[in-house]
Image 1 (cartoon, rainbow over the protein chains, first blue to last red):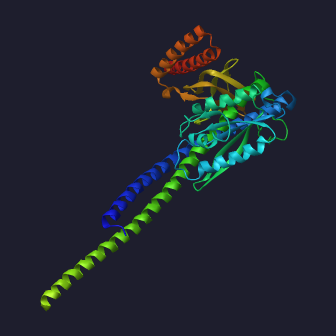
Image 2 (spheres, one colour; image 1 turned 180 degrees about the horizontal axis):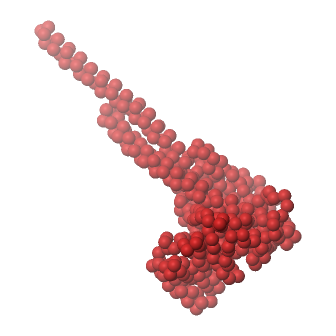
Image 3 (cartoon, rainbow over the protein chains, first blue to last red; image 1 turned 90 degrees about the vertical axis):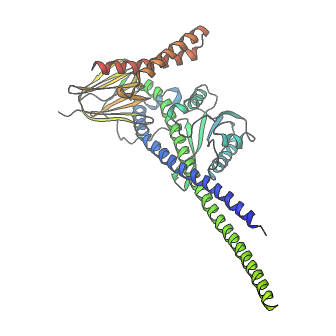
Length: 288
Length: 140
């Protein structure tokens, strides 16, 4: 049986923890809102670039596509795994790493693989399993487009030089506050937007010509795809942390209630036994 | 008279959406490009420079660090790598960036580092685009 002093200490300690988890919950909630706004803000560019690529592909014709869009046999696949730098985000990183390991292991039987990791958590989890060809742990959890350019340059250059023939990206999609779904998307060969137009639109003038504009546009498209995935990661990280910290705060509250009950009972029983002591002492004197 | 609708978007945000624009001047890779209402459909690549839009006597200036422009049925869409309105640009920062780019360029040329040279040249072009945007907007 713990002494009242011990119980008081434990209550204080759990209460301190609860203050920290509650603060983290509030910070994560406000950052999540900002991250969601960033996801929204990136949407117009993504919509417009997809439409432009569609029209350019239509005008170029499938037989004259620039080299970056021409299909080739896949002998080596690169995997880009997006994880967070910081923990206390519930099962988010574990889920991503598990999906990544499944994908990589399924592919590595047939072809050569290379693995590129974003985030310290992914680095820690994957470095023992695979040879990592690059690790990015300096990207902010509120990323701007410039933060991801070194990463996309590595991928685009590598694909153009033929170091790999396919790039798959694994990241958490922000579905809602409670759900972050691991997603696998192909960055290379570029998945072209489905053409919606039945026939070719009115003749478009291209400067300098459709193939060169398309060739210049594809890197932007890949950057945009990775950038949006990083924003999804950021929103997922904050929401997962918010939920985890809310659970931690609630657990701490329950724990404190239990401890307080035990402490009060103990105190009560001590008082009772002291009163009995005094009362029986007084009775003994009166009887004498 | 119906004017042009201009939308400028960068990966991070929608920079601008304006209706009733009467003239757009944009820095295409092949030279300065002027767009009036009823322009033929066009897709072009943009160089770093200044995007100017006029609405009657009114004009606004934006820096563009490169990108793409599409004209379709009097709707003009600019996909900018990065874009700022003249009022958002800090002249001091742009000048500091220009000085830094010049120094980098000099250092890169001396070491014959091609990648560094290209990067420094692009940084210089971006800084110059910002400075010119500020200057042109002040001239009105």
